[in-house]
Length: 171
Image (cartoon, rainbow, N blue to C red; front, side, top):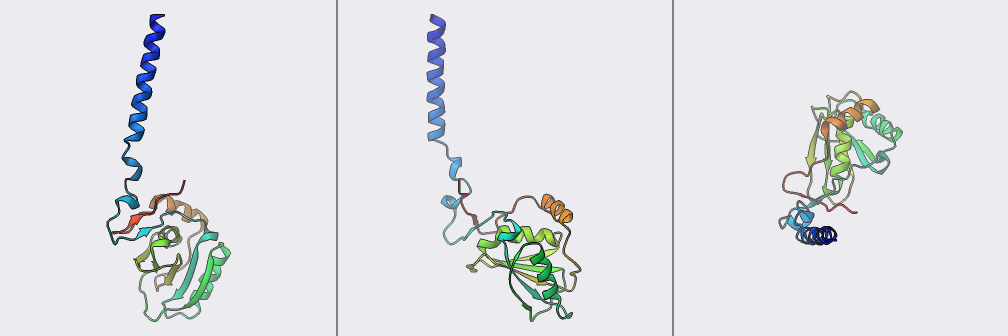
């Protein structure tokens, strides 16, 4: 009988410790909007599926029609291509990805299609979730599905740009 009383008492004490730990937990808001300094934008780090990613494709090379062909490649891969056109300033690298706070996760996915060789340009004042894909002189072709998957594994999870805060994750 004494053993049952001791076990019951230990169970009650353990329950009290658990309740106190849950109530006092301070990690629930760590790294979220609650800790975000004033003026820093909240960024969306969700890695989206291709069908949910909106892009504009621009040609910044001396080869005419390149943006149209690449836009078709992206459409075939289920991306939402909104605009296709030319960029006035030439780009020497493979590509430039321009995006705002709502497009961070989408830009992360697109990096994999350029095998992490695309320059990223974060535009904190941009209001939409569209990513501009600016093709440079170093661009040859989009990565294959296998290469994209390997590149995503190498890149890891999307990270918030400097002086931004991740949006709280909806549960």
